[in-house]
Image 1 (cartoon, one colour):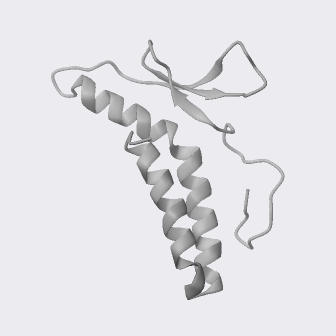
Image 2: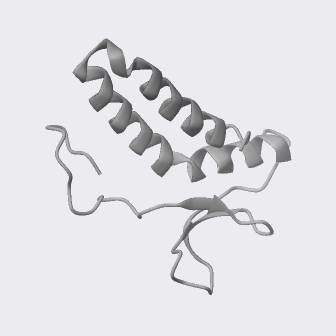
Image 3: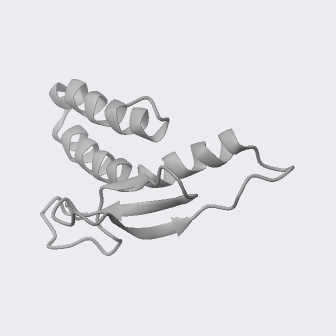
Amino acid sequence: MLTADHTRSVRPMHTPGPWAVHPVVARVEAFDALDPDGGTPVCEMLWPTELRTEAETDANARLIAAAPDLLQAAKEALAILRQGAPGWGVAKDILGTAIAKAEGRT
């Protein structure tokens, strides 16, 4: 994890990722690759109502689940862009991958 001065910090203040949308219940969970029992709930989604469709609820959950990846991608891209123009292609790829996950395209 990069800090504002582009050094590595020891641990993020938020629940570490990866996060994923639970396949059955309306919640986002943080998964530990070493924990075969599943994830730790990060947030629970409000069920669809007349004001919010199921598709919108699912999209909200995907966006929340992608938050750690989006944050990391933004930090990495910013560090690359601060180094100058040659890193633009790499920064674009990092951001594109994170955005695709947030939009449910991966």
